[in-house]
Amino acid sequence: MGCPLSTRERLAGGRGRDYSRFFAADGANVVLADMLDTTSAAQEASAFGPRCVGVAVDVTDRASVSGLMEATMAEFGRLDVLINNAGLWRGPNEAGLLHCPDDVWERVWAVNVTGSLRCYQAEVPLMELNHFGRVINISSMASRSGGNPYGLTKHAVEHMTRGMAAEVGYKGITVNCIGPDISALEAARGAIANADLVVAGNAVKRIGTSRDLYNAMAYLCGPGAEWVTGQLLRVDGGAGVS
Image: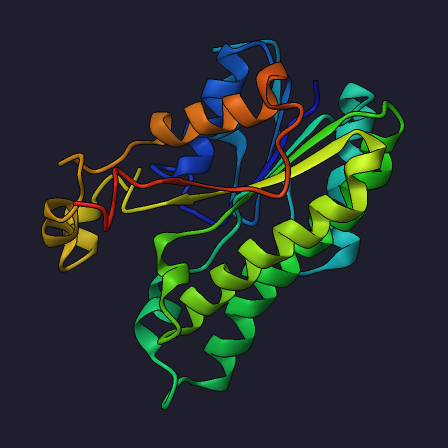
């Protein structure tokens, strides 16, 4: 099973690196895609399962994304799962709207929204070959806010998920979205000023982990969810319910 994970998080401690290990441990062949060097992350994941390869890709560039899909097919001969994990958040999350610089606005939309669309457009024809596919987009609790560019892009991703699901369901492809709270950031409490306050407001009083998010992915990719599509699954420790 070819399973590209496209990510812009730091591979040294980001979720993409963790997901690649978890998928590999569950028996998947994995393609780990990033603009950064993926060599060590791919080698690490290979130790957990069949095979993991790294590919340099810019998800905002159509030719680069096509190269990712070509590399996946050349290496494994098929594509079953796509995790659209690429995202920019820290600058756009803090920018606000009134004084948001043009370059911040344009870049976050290019990566978070257009990048997810580019990958979706390139992978559907490959999944069609086997009449099977699982696409998972990654959103955020920030999608509830309209006050910063990051949240707006994630709101768009959630709605785009529904549109994607509607147009490819008959092909045997499901498209769903996972919306995490503060999770899987190695130094979340240091990187986010009010992290402890956010966690205190959750029903489950801890920061989420990559494993929490992967468990949701495993469900959406598994046989138990073959009739589940166009859905947003919030994996957030009960944020806002307590």
